[in-house]
Length: 74
Image (cartoon, rainbow, N blue to C red; front, side, top):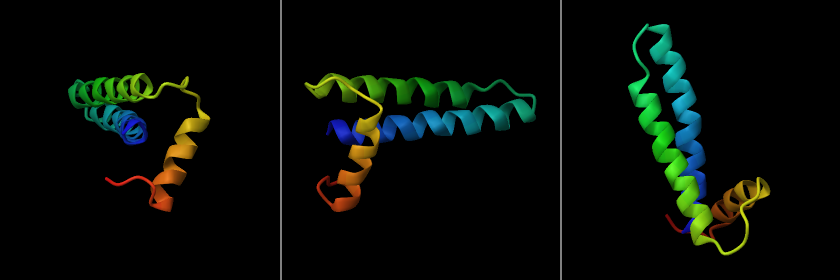
């Protein structure tokens, strides 16, 4: 479950950057980007809290590899 939260959190934070750029290009406040960023950050913290080992940047690649290998079920 922590792998799914780490992957979803990273995806939401990346999406928030795109949403922020699109909102600022239309001269609108980036509310959707802020919501996506906070949800992504919460998912990352929850994923890191559920895993007993310390969270590292390499965990993102390992989680993606486990997902592609079929070890993680969505």
